[in-house]
Image (cartoon, rainbow, N blue to C red; front, side, top):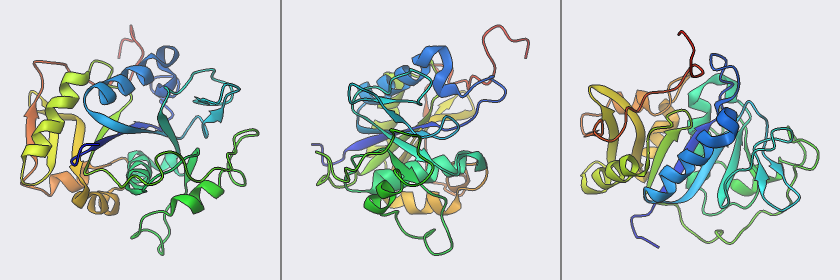
Length: 255
């Protein structure tokens, strides 16, 4: 295990209203699989996918996870599903859920992250308590999992996380690797992909910044609010590798 391990957080909770469906389902799950490949081959060890509009992940007969009970789309092997129960608040909710999961030492079930309250907003979600909610709240039939510890249980949180949305399908492993390397080499532990003058993804955050990002995330702004306050974030030019464009509309749309 690398002493400067980077984990990946894939944001895939949105309803995709402009696209016409949740983007985690786009092209039969091809965007989901491509984003996982980009994070994994780009240098991430544990990978978390944050779901929302599709409901909690569903345990398949083969022991793997499906995005939902009805989709038939498998979550790639080894990827941990997280469900942000307050997903409709915007990108902030899935960012908070992903960072809370990454901060946990080890989790082994379809983890539900409830919205923060005034008492819990400033502290990390207890993964065991959160896991216990799966069978009793907001879970589909057959979706519960009694385990609270998996083979990762004794693993400490990573030093970095790379955050990526599911809807940038041309962002590949080379982009992820470049931004992770920049964050590791920086004093701040902060780096973000830029495509021309446009900020994009992935965003890589050192662990010392996770609490600040979670506290500042609001509405449809995830890490962006926090990063705009920082003069020490490394801007990593990646437009030689990808466009980084968010796909908000189906291919062939006039918009």
